[in-house]
Length: 223
Figure 1: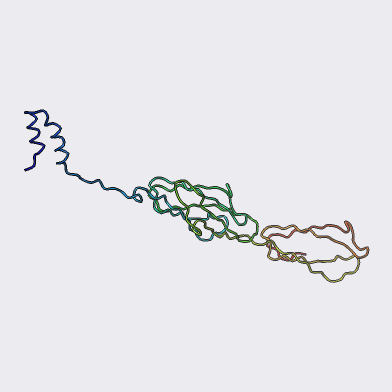
Figure 2: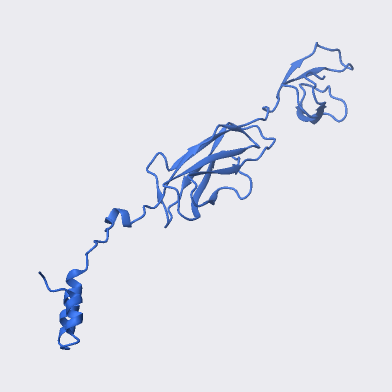
């Protein structure tokens, strides 16, 4: 039967030299429990990958919406940097350039909103685009998921088109008449300028030169 640490403990009462023997026996009798080792992949928590999807098209004056996705969810609040650009003239203050959005710990998505301006200028439809800027605590998704664009639709009518038709011939001393047409009708009073000239000597004061005519809102054919 093997000699045990307990027996060595009793033996040291007779001979002090049993002490190192007892310690050695205690080590041998200790049951070894291996500590689970994490793999390198388990030890390293992956940095969240950030991607973007675009919201629906909007009319100027509304907010464009971009959904920011993160995989996996961040373990703590995560601030992501973006770059905003436009096709056309839509952005309100602060305009194009850098923006940030903070995703709270555990969130897998959040919305980034970019405001547009409702102006009175007729213009072609355009877009707002957002791209993910690089950061230290996240990675950027591969194209095309690193950028998204939302269409912005203009809501202004085109300016009225002005045309002229001539009235009937007159005898000197009578008024000549020209009909001014506008399409579409102006939404507010519209002042137009005309240049008047003559072949001969017919004009009364103020003579040849620039004349103005104001069309009231909604009018399509003044004279």
